[in-house]
Length: 214
Image (cartoon, rainbow, N blue to C red):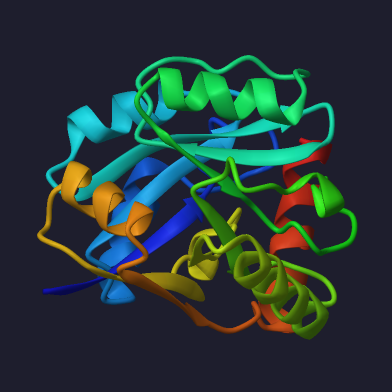
């Protein structure tokens, strides 16, 4: 079967996200998603907790701040340390039983890996709905994935609940975390989606500012 999975979502366990667990599941279902990867910044505890508390399919993950840019580790059950080099970070993700994804490798203001993306990665996030500039990011992300011969995926990089599902990955797999992960490794997946609308981005920024001023 073909599943719709948003592989890059932040919850309120990330310092810059507004999304509660209840909103996460509500909007995922509203958008017709079959699952979500929770990828909070440099922490795994929220993803593991939420995965235990809901029957909606959650892939536990983490967005790691490596020395050379941000890296997604999916299907990991332990914290992957930040501030390590790219190769060491990818090795630790694999040792933890997960897969490593070069997230938004060709965008501005987001800790882009750029030239540090290499064939040790399992996939490249070709479509990131939060990326700026969006079309440039998609074009160059796709070029990187094709050059390296690795899988192409997509995620919303949502930090505000209505952003969930703006981009997602179509995966040919059964509804089970391990099956989905194996399908991504094999390239049985396709990135899909569009940029987060400007009005939605502005609403997120206003709400984030209000939270900081409380």
